[in-house]
Amino acid sequence: MSTDEPLISIKNLKVHFEDSSLVNAMIPAWISDRLGIEEEPTVRAVDDISLDIGENDVIALVGESGCGKTTLGKAAVGLQRPTGGSIEYRGHDIWDVRAGESDADITFEEIRRSLQIIHQDPGAALNPYRSVLDNLAVPLKRWNPHLNHEERRNRILNMLERTGISPPEDYAERYVHQLSGGEQQRVALIRALLVEPDVILADEAVSALDVSLRIGVMDLFLEMQEIFDTSFVFISHDLANARYLAGKSGGKIAVMYLGEIVEVGTAEEITTNPQHPYTKVLQWATPILDPEQAEEAMRESPPVRKIDIPNATEPPSGCRFHTRCLEAREACRRERPDLYEDEETFHRTRCFRQLDDHDYWDSPEYTDEEPSSSADDKQQTHE
Ligand SMILES: Nc1ncnc2c1ncn2[C@@H]1O[C@H](COP(=O)(O)OP(=O)(O)OP(=O)(O)O)[C@@H](O)[C@H]1O
Image (cartoon, rainbow, N blue to C red; front, side, top):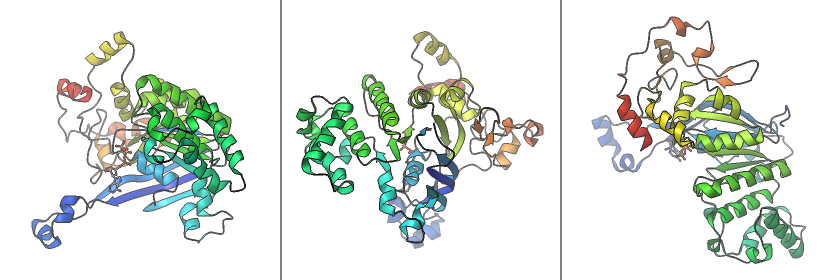
């Protein structure tokens, strides 16, 4: 259950990258000028996002590849400098603290300790030349220097045991490559938990795992979340994972599309009552386990005009989803919708269709793009 005071407050966050791709970098500026090539288009990875993360909160960020999930997550934990807007940790602007321009009684280092990250590839975060014990001793030595060797060892063995790595004495002596993917992810989780963080960002932390192991690791994350009262931000391109994580923990799902959050709600709301047309596309593309239901779903056309996602360097005007949206009208091309909140459920949706009296309803249907063949779309989406 989260308290009113946010742990992290993200306000109008922008992270734009200058896309200095190799091709651009190899073309001299004078040739680019003559050919009219724009040298470094700006990638609007995160564009005007506001989001609070409360104490003991669970948020599952979901969206297609390239929509800005990782960039938002990294910015939230102080690993990515914003190009606009702000990120506050317990009321202190993280980057002002880092620049020494804040009167906060906390250092940037301490903020970074409180905000941990777990990557998709846990092996990358662990030193392959050290044992599990030595790997896990590193954060303890740094943040709990008063502990002696024996105390550190006991704490680590205890965590190994609690996370189901048994016998802990045996595993503690193993090297990272001697562990399975699931065990490595558990060790990465322990490494993050040992420094007693307020927030753990788990970036596609279960995506690489076999489906059979996935539920076990997700359950472990949620169990640890409850025991340690740590907030978790789970990043996933898979709505099914997001639903599981947010559903079991009573957390929220935030759906991202092209650098924006388009819908936020409980797992129940997003699953049974999705409001944004893009969320319905994600829902449609999410595998259904029941074979009978899956077959029926396969017969339905995708609820989208076209499959291709626009380029993040040139996002569509107005509502960014309008070029793919079956419900789009002219108003959607002209004007950017806000995240409108349902007063009863707190479900928020960035779509004019939430407002009974919006001009949208009198606006002509959007016709710029020809709807593509639904049969082709179906095939492409399932490939
Ligand atoms: N350092 C960078 N320089 C330039 N562009 C970047 C950089 N990092 C990310 N991007 C671009 O920003 C956009 C968002 O990327 P991001 O990795 O945040 O998306 P994502 O939703 O996490 O995708 P994925 O699931 O594939 O990791 C993409 O277009 C990506 O190419």
